[in-house]
Length: 140
Ligand SMILES: [Zn+2]
Ligand SMILES: [Zn+2]
Image (cartoon, rainbow, N blue to C red; front, side, top):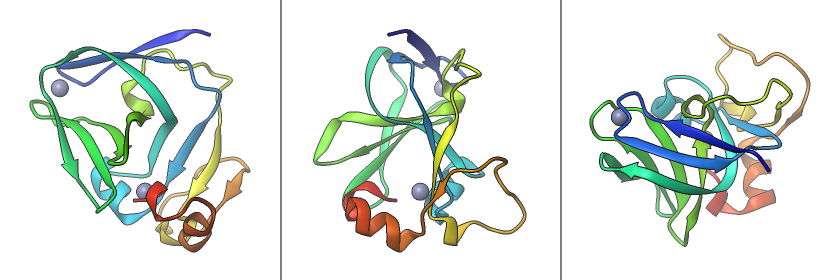
C-alpha cells in the first residue's frame, strides 16, 4: 500500500498515513465550524508522526477530540477518546491524494446548508441515521 505524507500549513505537524481507498464528508455544525466548510476526511487511519511539536487536541464532545496545529491553526485530526490510536485525517492536510479516490459518504446531510452541494452521487445519511448506524461515538 502507498504511504502518503501530510502536514499542517507551518509543518509543525507532519505525518504519514496509508493511502486511502475512499474519503468521507460531514456537514454537521461542529465539522463546518471547525473546518470552515464541509469536512472531507480520510476514514479512521493509523497515523505515524514525524513531527507533532505544535499538535493540540480539543475535546469537542464527551466522546471525541479534534487535533489542530497550535501555531498555524490547521484542522487536522478527529479521534475517539476511547480509541485514540486511530483518527480521521482532514483530506486537505494530505499530499498527493489519488485522482481516483472519491467521497463515498456524506454524513449529517440534514445539517448541510443550501449554499453548497458536493458534486456526484453517493450515500447520504442524516444525523439520526449516523447515530443509528455507528452509535453516538462516531459522530461529531
Ligand atoms: Zn502548523
Ligand atoms: Zn461532523
